[in-house]
Length: 298
Image (cartoon, rainbow, N blue to C red):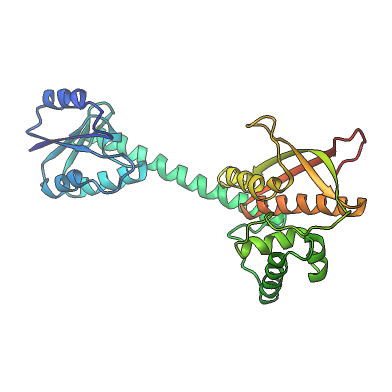
């Protein structure tokens, strides 16, 4: 028996083209399904696979109507061939009911396996290169017992609002970047509590930031997420402006009491951005220049 299988992704898509070609092929029964190609759950296809018997043939318009991916398609066709059920694709040179079609399919399967091996090899090479540079990747590690205690103390002092961020960091023996990390760990919104210090308004310096983020390997993702996290959790604290939405340049306003504090704040800012990129299996290159007419840069 010859079965036809028609699939479209949405109810708005027309099935006429597929139906006409399957009818011309002489299908005894045509089953239709409306479901996304990425979905694993396809009730109509499952019913068809349960229905076919040795000697039957399934006809489809194109291979992408049947398999979710190349690997899924290969597994499905191998299962059909083991059950002595043929598969014929009208728009592709695949017809497992004859020797030539089975040969072409086996070539496709071999190429797919070769590509998977290449991806694994490249990924391993990228991870090895990253480890050689001291980047181990993976999820960020949780806080140690000592760090948990400091995070608790940092949260209490910050919420009390009697000390500045610099004073809290100094009292706990940590950097500002680490303090912000502890506050985020405790799910505290940063910036809504500040100590009021009469007659000691901080100076401000407008700076230009040029930042480039790259992944350690083209097979490892995380670049976009690193960028969003740095913008939202690091740069946003300094009145971030981004002249070009898709560009890599930013303008920040850095508050400070003295030059030493300015240097420390900017170094912490760079360190926190680099650590964020590193936690996403990437790296950041950052250059910061003062916009006050001087030649200061970090």
